[in-house]
Image (tube, rainbow, N blue to C red; front, side, top):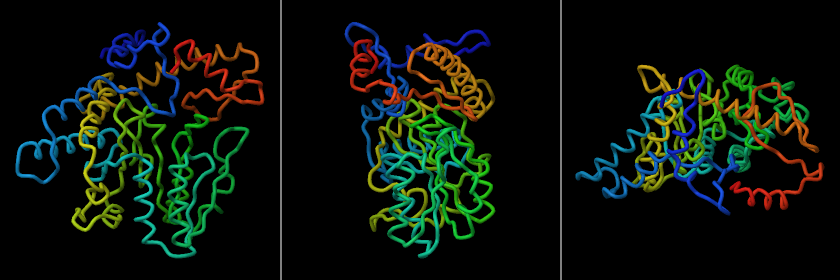
Length: 361
């Protein structure tokens, strides 16, 4: 799609999302549940349906539908590799990010001893907290928490050197909060983790559609996201550094592969859903220019972010004019998220009913 300095092809974009054709009470629907996921782009829907219409099969068969399934998975892993700046053999798919994190935490836990430590944060989604807490409880590990600065709505890193120490094995941190929208400054966290030899496991689910991800540049060891947040189906994605993946021994069935990344992909995967990942990623690339898909993705996301920021500014400016709405200033850029403080007198029930009248889904 052609993007210029003065024009963003918003109508052409809207036409690629069938869910936007829906009406409710005679009005076009607007979807406001950002943390609940994005709508799915038509090219991804077509890929999902196309896989099912052609006839699917499981892997490692000596017949066309099995070969095609393997090609579909490989194509989606190539696209994820470009999306996250990783290698395709470092990518594993799963039911969702939560399921993958539980499996990874349990597998890593086999390498730790009682008295070792992990670090989680008070701002993370529970999917990047509870799997680590459960593993720590099972293995006798100690848990330290990076607290939230409730005034700035970001992490308080003042005691980072004490929280992340020589006993630390894993630091689990989110790149963007789906509760308050803050984009976390992970650079000092990664730097400190590297100093003590700890792994960094980053939840990028809420960040993936809003900012370019680069596992290598960001210094992340285990990067997790999910395609349902970036215009694709509900498939979890893990990108794990090869040297870590080689040593990972996930719980699995006896006949299933014992080599990575397949050993993390338990059971028969959602092949039709995986077919929709590549088109979702190529949707980002369609806005950009460049000789490689990675360069087109990065350029496309720059255009999307600029347009998204212009919309967020309009919304913030409008909210500032409303009674009982207090705008907050963030020290870092943030993914836009509208939060309601019940102390102001707003009530979610009446607000939800009013939203339904205006076709906000």
